[in-house]
Amino acid sequence: MITTDLVIVGAGPVALFAIFEAGLLKMRCHLVDYLPQVGGQLSEIYPKKPIYDIPGFPSVLAQDLIDNLMKQAEPFKPTFTLGERIEFLEKKDERDFILTTNLGTKINAKAVVIAGGLGCFEPRKPEIKDLEKYENGKGVNYMILDPEKYRGKKMVIAGGGDSALDWTIFLSELCSELTLVHRSESFRGAPDSVNKVMRLSESGKINLLLNTNIQSVFGNNHVELVNVVNAKTQESATIYTDYLIPLFGLSPKLGPIENWGLNIDKNAIEVNTEDYSTNVSGIYAIGDINTYKNKLKLILCGFHEAALMSHSAYKYINPGVKYTMKYTTVQGVNEF
Image 1 (cartoon, rainbow, N blue to C red):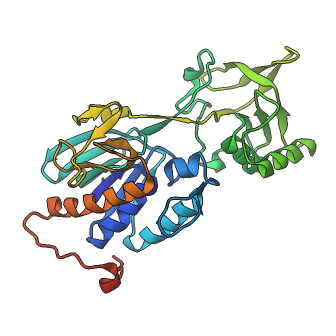
Image 2: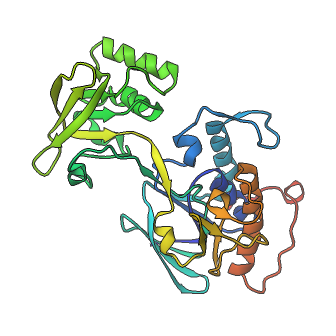
Image 3: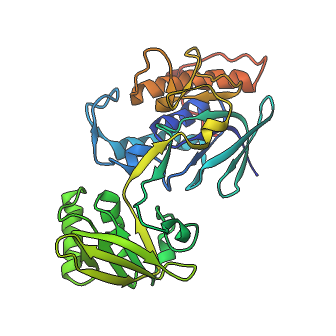
């Protein structure tokens, strides 16, 4: 079992800054996120998007902000469980929470911080009959957690955004056969990535099927073939494959958090603005996932919430212990 002071549900920018604020108070953090990497929306959806309202940065790319936040958090040695989702939360006593992920990982924490952005990002699934039969280790995956798993395998990727393009480029060197299926002639991804995919197609390293939709998936307890149809010509084809990876983006949902006994208002968690605590003592919510009067869903507001939450969590974890705040310009940043 993993033990920590604060377990932070989410690994977006506000969660990463909370590591720093908690670290200044000598509290260790363990972060859990359903996505396979840190960064939340910024890394998964728009890593190259410029952000203009971060203090001190007239403009900063989303992924650069995440990279800087990770460097800022490094002295406090955070730990992570990525590619898993918290399913169950049990409060055994004050300062004693047990959280369990969908893969059975257990975390024991003294306090819980929910910083899940807009909620748990779940994959947008194509409407293909019986597709769910091939999930959970039977060939259909919606995220790529371990690229080595696909080395020497036949693979079909479906999608036309940055994620589909980037993984096609990367996996073209690992797979024995790789097909990219896209329902349109144009892509939503970065032009440079589009050009690379086109060159891979022209050189025969990948099969590129445009204006094409997946109709059905078949196999004997595991994906074996995918049937596709061209939307213009209505010609159909069968692709033999070991894996199908639909990459159609992610949609935010509150998920299991709805069952944790928290006060919820329109898919957001109600908090006390004195310290961003919830109605359950020891559980806090910061960032876009919380709600209160005059709430602004801005990263910089989430940073403010993380700072106040950390000081409150310190008092909760250390009842009766006095703490005198000192500016980092005075005390510096001391590593664990």
